[in-house]
Amino acid sequence: NAGVTQTPKFQVLKTGQSMTLQCAQDMNHEYMSWYRQDPGMGLRLIHYSVGAGITDQGEVPNGYNVSRSTTEDFPLRLLSAAPSQTSVYFCASALLGQGIATEAFFGQGTRLTVV
Amino acid sequence: GENVEQHPSTLSVQEGDSAVIKCTYSDSASNYFPWYKQELGKRPQLIIDIRSNVGEKKDQRIAVTLNKTAKHFSLHITETQPEDSAVYFCAAVNRDDKIIFGKGTRLHILP
Image (cartoon, rainbow over all chains, first blue to last red; front, side, top):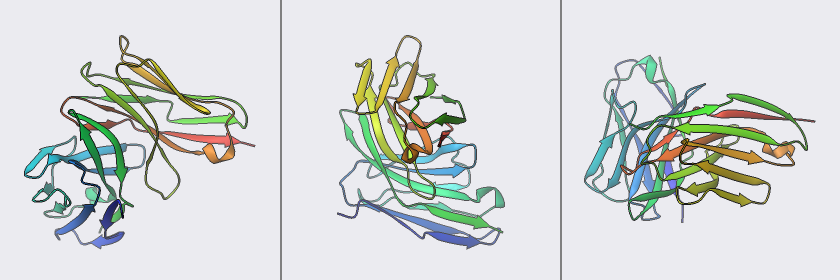
């Protein structure tokens, strides 16, 4: 049982490049989400999903795309990287019970630098 | 949408003293309030949570209180120890299942 696996751990991109951050969980969680963490800003929700085929925007969705074709995977795509997207990204998953999210389990994080 | 405010942003307490971190939320429909601890360079991990039908919950040195009328909840850590030094995040979850976090509190335990 690996929990939430996030790759890569570190990435440097040039402005304008695109890339995909991978996230996979093996706990059969319905809920998956992506956050970015910046100094003094806490964890800000980018996109989230409550099940396969369902995605929704969070607090800061611009510049990011997601899809949820399976329960296990929730990749985050940066379409055209900008320096403002330099951040630490966390994927998190949780079990939904009666519409109530429970404990969220986080991946190890991806430190992304856009130059 | 939900908005979560967390105070203070930094807190220093003497080892052995108590620490209190406070959060307010805006969406009265929010029904689940977890607290996460993040040590330097690591991922956030749940330390305690409370649901909207409960006013207080305790787990050893950690307790959380919830005031639904005022829409605020607090984390209390008693008999603080050096390993309590970390960043703590509160969060609120509403019926849309969004987990919205506060900006975090950096807790320093002074020897």
